[in-house]
Image (cartoon, rainbow, N blue to C red; front, side):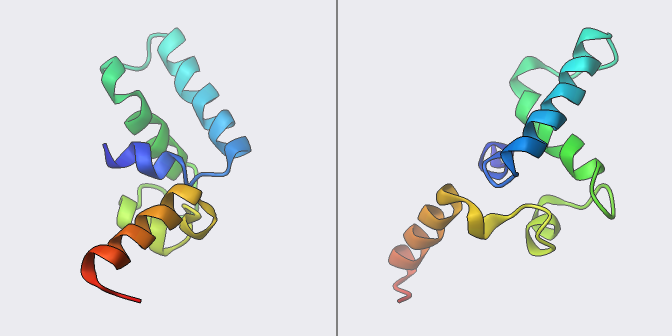
Length: 88
């Protein structure tokens, strides 16, 4: 899922706090998502805690709510795209 990729772009300390929030929701019975959607719940919970809560993923990356430039995964992806489309 795209959220798995985006999860790598979240500061790890903030990611841990967000996971605690989601885990608490699960433990208290407030969460109804399927286990397969855990990462989706984490990323969207993180985005809900940011300035302008609820931004779509693309806008969150553009607004640097997700720090794409700092992510090794994102750099590899951008490099791959450059090679795929012949950009230098």
